[in-house]
Structure formats: C-alpha cells, structure tokens
Image 1 (cartoon, rainbow, N blue to C red):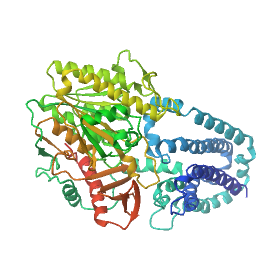
Image 2 (image 1 turned 60 degrees about the horizontal axis):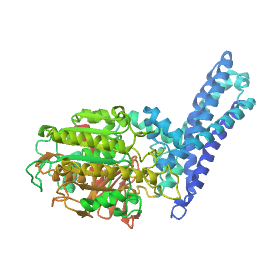
Image 3 (image 1 turned 180 degrees about the vertical axis):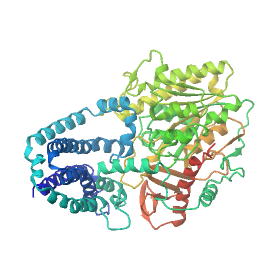
Image 4 (image 1 turned 90 degrees about the horizontal axis):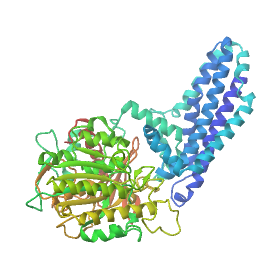
Length: 635
C-alpha cells in the first residue's frame, strides 16, 4: 500500500542519517574506548533504540494527516508534508554535522548547552565562523546536495496518491500506525519509557555518548529544563533534606547555624592579623588546565610567568574546579559555592540578588568592588549576577577606549590587565579599599591574541590553545610586573586561578584528572608555600580572605588551608553527572542510574565495589546545594 511504503521509506532514510552519524563518531573516537572492557558494539543496538524514538516521533504528524485528512485537502497536505520532510531531512543532517565540532569542543553530543548559547548569537556565530570555516563549508555543501537530491526524487514525496485510497481504509490505518509509533517512541514495555539514561549502558563515557542520538539529547534536555527546571533531583536518589544538610555539615566540618537563614554561615578568625586589612584581587583564567603549567605537573615552556611567580606565593598543586564551564568557576571562586544542580547560579533567577559574593561580604567594611572583563559582560548573564549581588562597577568591552587589540571574545588580556592596574592604582591613591574580579578572554576558541607579544610554540598553528595560554600567561606576568611598581601591591592579596580546564576530554564517566587546575595567591607579605593537599575553588577563596587579615562571617563552602578544620574533598559536575571525591575514592551520581564508586589512582578512574556511605554523601551534597539555592539560604 502506498501509505505504508511512504512511511517505511522515510523511516529508513532518517534512520540511515542517524546510523551514518553514529558510524562516523564511532570511528573518530574508537581509540578512546578500543582498549576498554566494555562491549562497545552494543552502542549500535542501544543507539538504534534512541534513533527509533526520534524517527517515530517525527512520523506522528505525517501519519495523522495522511490517515485523517479528507481528500479535498490533498493538495494542501501534499505541499505541507513535502516541506515538512524537506526541512526535517535537512535538520537531521545539520544536527549530525553539528555534532562533530560540538563533540570536539565539549566531548559530548549536543545537549542543552547547544541551544542555551543561542541567546548570544553574535559571540557564537563569530566563534563558529572563525574556528570552524572548513566544517561549516562541508556542512553547507552536504545540506545543499541533500536538498537537491530530495527535490529530484519527487516520487518519494508525492503524497497525493495516498488520498486515492478510500477514506475509511485510511481512517482504519490510523489506529495501528499510531500504536506502532507509540511503541517506538516509548521503546520500553517497562514501568518507565526509554530515556537518555538507556544510552548510558557502560562505564566508558565516550561509548555512551556515541550511543546517544543528538536530536534526542537536545530535545530531552529542553524537556527536562522546561518541565522540571532544576528541581528534578529524585532521579539521583532520595534523602530527607535535614539528613542531607547534617551529612554535608559533618563532611565540611562546618556547624549548621541555629538561625537557619544562612545555615553554613559562621565567623572565621584570621590567621594573619594586620593593622590595615588588605585589598583582594581575583584574576580568573579562562580554561587554564594544570596540564599546561609546569609547576602543577604540566608541560614546560607554556606558562613561564606563572611558574616563576608561584615561587613567590602560595601554590596550589592539587586544586580541582567545580565544573567545566565559566559560570561554575565564577561561583566557586567569587562566592565559594559548589555547583548547584541544573543551570549554574550565575544564570538562575533566585540567585540574581541576595546571593553571597565577596562584594556583599566586603561592602559593609568599606570596600569598593569591580568586575573587569574584556568581553561583553551580558554573556552568561555575568553583568546581571555581579551587579545584583553587590558589585559596584562593571568594566567590560564597551568601556575600553582604543584598546590595542580586539578579538572575537573582546579586548586582549593585556588591555584588560593594564586597565585594571590603572583602576587599582587610582583607588589606592584615594585610600579606597577594593575587591575586584578580573576575567581573561584570550584562551577561548578561536584563540585570538595580538601578534609579537610571545615567542610562538614551534610546530603548532599560531591560533591554538597552547599559544593562547602562553599569551594569557604573558598578560599575568605583565599585570604583576606593573602592580609591583606601585604601592598597592603590598596592600593587596592577588589570586590567580583557573575557572576550569580547557576541555574535559576523557573516557571516564567523569574524568577527574581534567578538573585539575592551577592556582596561586601572592602579594606583599605572603610567604612562599606549596599546598599539596586536595583543595577546591571555595578553599582558595577562603584562604585569600584569611590573608586579607580580618575576622569575617560568611557561608563559603570551603576552608582556609591554614585552618586545622579544613577537610579534603571535592565536588565536581559534568553536565548532569556529579562526583564527590574524598581521598582516593570518588562516588559518581547520574540521573536514573545507580550510583557508582571509583578509585582514583594514577589519574585513572577504576570501578570498585559500591561505597554506599560515600554515595550517600554525594547525594547529600547535591540535595543540599539545591536546597540552599531554592530556599535562598546561601547568603
């Protein structure tokens, strides 16, 4: 029957698009899982289930129209379905093409991030055009060819012949066809329909990503965000919130406040009493992983200035980031907050005011606070969050007059540090204490930076992450060099820390080693010291505030390394996966899946027997972080 043939044809065509995309990914990343002990061939079987869900969903509208529309509408239906399948066909091909650069950048298939950044088309399209010209050209040629072939195969999208079938027969086909599509969409005879967790069948993350379907991954992420927002946490497990809070309190060694308005707020007495409290400057480094910094075990020759300066201050050699995006690093380094489930607090409604930051802490003490960024501060809602939570002034790209160099993401790091230096010098001359957050931009694809500033690394393209990092390091050196010439240097605590690693690439379910970042604190009167114990961005912030020389009351979820109450743990987030590391053990929690325990040895994750207690602690952290946000208790 014509109707069945048409549906079967489009079913197989769309399925083939997804199959080819999966084959390409499988081959591109085969070496990442070839030596694993998982059955990676099952990626095609489980992947078929994901593909069938999408294909069946895409056939719902055609089935309804072809079985229920009256004959007099055949021309309208014919035109509509021709356009529908043309757009759908090209859309699916586009998504499979877009999967390749997205996977290369983020090491996952497209997810909510894929649509979230469409809020910033200028930055995104400039980056795509600058960094992915060849990929963009290939994708456009493929789309053009596919569209041409589609339009030439008229017999496969001439739906008018279907209406020659008696209406009663078409109507009677509606029920079995819808039933078949419903089975395909549900893809499960169990209590719950299939979902993205069905693709996560192995302990090798790359195999799981190959198994997924990109269209389904995006749609499912949007669905969860719209329906549940960021409060759908029972997918990780259940625990009474009071028990969760007590567990977190015990592990952080922070007693819960009796008042309850800010449960983790407490007074921290300084270990460095001074006559005049010091200024605080936090210089966040975009995407700087420890593998690029020699003094933290990385490659030599890329960050000579950081290496040299680390001998003058406090170096953190075992520091781990909150997550894999800047908004997580900002929350950790500026607010001392761990990653909240769902969107980061920088972009969420309930944290746009009344949320703890260094500005809200120090403003009552007379400090003036600044956020200095070479790009557009509206990106990732940074402007709104900083202004709403106590920062007095935002200096971003629009406020730089005649910068020496402007790239895709804004003015150069050197332009930014020189402007910062002038601001700090001016405030110090006015006896104005200050707290500032500086945020670099250069180490971000397409890696724009001015020529002639560094000696390029041999054997690699000029516009590459290594040369961009070397330029960012040059800007660090220039900043500290200029600061040392002025009196404010001795009165200021300088924190230089990464927001996250450049790319979290790894086959582990959560590649812990790629959360390892460099960090140091220096300034007048700070003695050289190396901290080898496990630390987090909140620990670095607490240590920096300790060094300002004043007793402070705050809810930071970390401790100064000079406190005997500090505990060694790290909470890490990767998309919707969370990991709590305590010592060498790591508990990993995923939605709709059983928690797992790993042993972290020699920078590798080894699956071991369940540590039920550690897994409960990890769940407690997730639930507590969400509770603090939802009830606005982090202040």
